[in-house]
Amino acid sequence: MRSSHPKAGRLLPPATAGLIAAGMLLRAGATPLAQTSPNQSGESPAAGPPSSGETAPGEAAPRCDAAHEGIVACFANVLCLCRFHPGDAARKLPDRFAWDCGITRPQCHLPPADLTPVDPYAVPPVIVDVDHPHADDEDNQEAESVPPQP
Image (tube, rainbow, N blue to C red; front, side):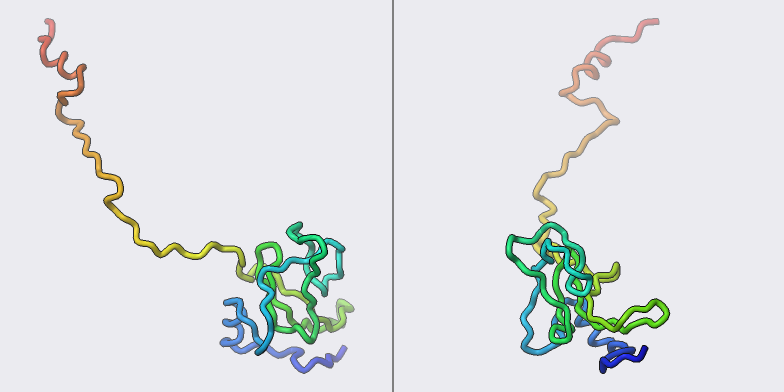
């Protein structure tokens, strides 16, 4: 099966792959779809991954086709990439556009890093001396005042 897509069989350059991993869009003028999720209607795999149950009623999943190639969207806490998948004659798979939500894709709901400095003196240190008797410890005072019996 010969692919008709111009990018079939072509690997992404490292700079482009880094932009994708960082969640940036590849196409100029594209709108981000970072917080969308697929709908509950059970669309085909080319339209989006299985539903995660986070979809609001009436919200449609973003499409993955030639017009939307290179965009990213968040599905089930994974930042998925819309990309072209060349067909495989041995497995009888046609050329198609599909969401890449593989295990190597980054997460999208991570909280931002907290860069506030930690105050090391927020809780004063407590020094405990276990080798010497304390004035507050009644057991130690009694032990010192009572001589040992023979």
